[in-house]
View 1 (cartoon, helix red, strand yellow):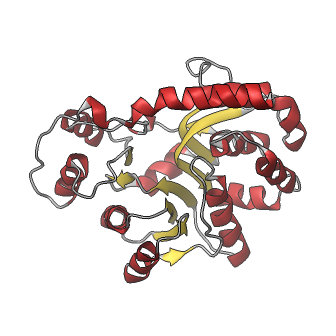
View 2 (cartoon, rainbow, N blue to C red; view 1 turned 180 degrees about the vertical axis):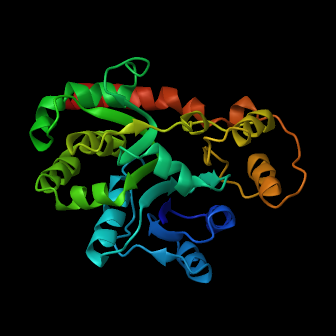
Length: 291
């Protein structure tokens, strides 16, 4: 069984769109909301959709969402929930294909963790990734909390854990120290280095997700979406517009409902990839301030 953990802050319409996509393709799955905002409309929508709200939900800062993963893991572990896989999703994603559980059982036969673009920090083609570079620079401050020689990284959306790894993470005597370091660290997006490094440290034989191409920090046009829908390793897509009537959402919703999708071209201005220069400036500023 799969548990889908969904992080949402607001925008109940897009949250409902994601829930519809999960239930369409995985009607027997369990969904848990981590409410990372303070929008009562989102909480009300979760009740309407009969989606359980994680009791460790709390408002989260942008790019500080590691508490989402740990909150879900903590509740599942404390409640003794039985499942096979925990798949973590952001609200700007949609599920696009059935058969994920069988796919994961085969793919993860000898692994307990997969993630988008999993890699060892500093290794090409991700050697210029700013978050990874700065974490690697500070590795000496973190290494005592892990049992591995070198840290790892990934792109956050769609991280997937076997139950055994979730239990190991929560029971690990060093996890408390990891979270204390997280609390003190100024680095953003630590979920993209802490979780893959924990998986490596705990002997989970982590792997790169075969569907990584469809998980990017950009929006897609119809041709790209069609190519991902034709790829049997792609079960979810990120990034999707956070406008409910966005062209990409309408396209995928039409496919999901068996309707003819409308062709469109995504404008360059709509792509979230334009945020990369701003992120690089932020990371450079933090580097000089804290390193």
